[in-house]
Image (cartoon, rainbow, N blue to C red; front, side):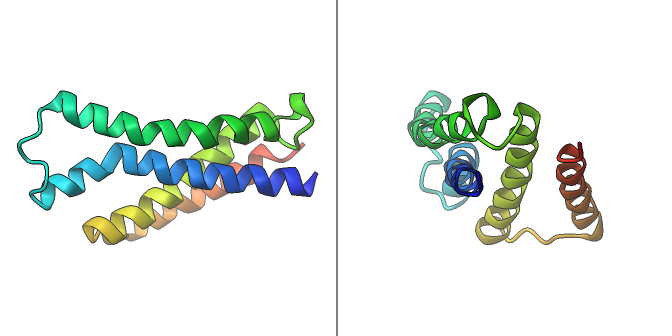
Length: 123
């Protein structure tokens, strides 16, 4: 079970890296003046091309990790884990790509989400 759980979490991490890039990389490229003239439909296609890789990791992670398929996580546990991973990846990306500074309220919100994971796993 531990192996399926760690593999699931690893796949979710990779998936969320691609998701974050699909959702926000175009903003960084626009700030860098690399795609300022692209129409919205081209940006959407660019993002979708990245999102394909996200789904290539997200779907297997959910299938492997779901208790209905012999995995260690309930559907709700999978979603809560995914949300915390998403937030973690986004924070790292926004700090690296945009120089975002974390304030006390951001850290407090993150702690609340980590507590949400803990509560989700209480039986």
